[in-house]
Image (spheres, protein in one colour):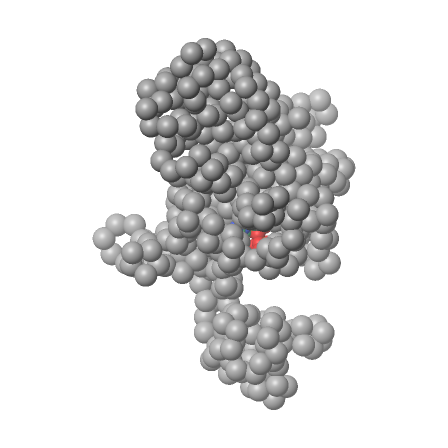
Length: 459
Ligand code: ATP
């Protein structure tokens, strides 16, 4: 029976104590909104990334993977519009530490009747004072002065920190697909509709608080850009909405914790946009986005690069710039959702509480733990470790009581624990315990690989 309130603190503590995720640069007092994945966490996240790649690239015949450079020609960020948004007027609420765009606050307050874009910082501040605009998050009237904010991290190439040498850490991976649209189309002889997919790091000078892995300044995106004809675009958009939902449900997120959220405010070039939200301990929040971006991205790259980004239909000879449907999900944010979903505190018959992570076995960090009942069974246990670690990620633990060792494995979500006992020495049979039911069966060595393989697959 489970009866507990899930909080982000519980997840953060478990992650820190069991080796999922540690605070970044911890021995130096940390570094805000950065986190390091530990030995258990890196397995979990890798399994999630592998599952995504398998579903969206390996099993999708018209999708091609790339791994583009993080540092790109700076003109890319002019084409994408990021450089134009440099210096957005931002201010912080000193009470709740949230940061907002001053012009957006004014436009929202005036219900769109005022265009604040062209206002100076002084005019913005005067309006906010005169109309007593309070913090939309906590309701206080406690603002810092307005400051310009840079959404991208900037570094420099060469020895001088001159403007001409500025390079940017990419704030989104998708530009790597757009700039390679012609290359991939040509080398793969791809026919529209086709998608280019990528998993890679993005960097954002985030302006709102992190909430653990939810919002970090460095994170991994798993995303694809589908290039298509305009006439196909809405049905492809709908297709990815469903496929994106199905994927996270298959990974273990419960449907009652998931919902679509259609955007009512669209970018001027966008035809449709939708998030899938997950019910995190901090409330319903975006898990991934599906966006119909029209021909905006390829047209902009055509304009800034001078290269013709058109596609010629081999059957009709029609020449056109394809529409883009984007599907993007953060690997770290999805990892957080799966950690929240998996967490359980069960009250056992003896009144004790068992913390258990009910990950789908396919994404569990370790598939098997090998536990010799006593230390003098180590040699035999090592034999099993050598055999099984060729097939699965295995943990090995011979320290402490068997009960405590089971609890530790429950807390990192290991679906199977194999106990080596004295009978193993006689006939090579072991007990194998199921994490969720805690039931044990006895199996022979040669049955193990098959038994485990069958149970760790997606259905
Ligand atoms: P948000 O509104 O939460 O800032 P966004 O709309 O800016 O997100 P996109 O640019 O569409 O996000 O990025 C796609 C996905 O990348 C998001 O749905 C999310 O899963 C992930 N993501 C975006 N920003 C971050 C971040 N700072 N930290 C972790 N993951 C992020």
